[in-house]
Length: 406
Image (tube, rainbow, N blue to C red; front, side):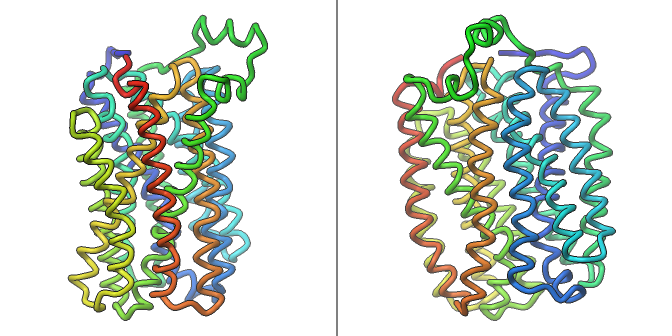
């Protein structure tokens, strides 16, 4: 489906997608890069930090599930703009919260806005794309997430620890500046189609749309893939700087490696998205799946040299975020346009459960006395299960040739 808009051609729409994802990625990463400063000022325990990290995940779960469903009824553009405005406002609130309890509450509200934004951003990217470049467009829409996270890491690197609140100030102001561009350049987005209205008239609810006989296996595999990939991603996003300092790196070296994690993820995610539109898609998927456990093992046993960990972090981010691209492309291809927001939103919500569990899992390992090496090795079984699910769901979609559907 191609959409045009009198105020902007495709290049401007792509730029708006990228900027929106940049702001979301910055806000998602903000908690992780500010953790050391929060810990020093507010004397947070590992459990406090785990709840703080997971509060956004809980909000993201609610926002993803509700935002995609509402967008299929009232239009994606309206819901996207509302969601981005909300997470900007609540990120500003986070910057002024004086206690861990208020910080955690503000992150929960930020998460609701974040959760409503991403499913509609991806669904809009799929809606407006032609078949031959659909996955590349989805990749561009998503890749701003790790780039935004990298910018958060760079800002934290430049700021002293006691200035951690500035990270949330920037994370709140940036979305507010992007909203006018969304209003001006985004197409109107999907509004309820005749098919969708007929489905509602016949009493088809969300579960019938997603778990009907022709979609149940793909939907369940998609949910499990999102859960495991996002669990792994958020565990690394939130705990990697502290794990690297635990392995002997300085604070600056750990922050530089975290930025590399996001930059490597962005670059390889774009490559992965482009390859999904070609005959090399299967090779790229298999390489991505095999690389993740190998890289985690190397990160656990390699000498604590800044250059070594910089390279490993880039490759590790690439392997994890490229798997995210695969499941987002699969999710967009699994559902027709009239329920795409609902389908992608439900899948993202399953992933948000992973974003809730991942930081808590890391907190539990650290609180129980595990070293940084043991935590990294403890993620290996998760990464293997994650790769198996990503391979299965992409096989289900590719086998039915849904990556090539118009």
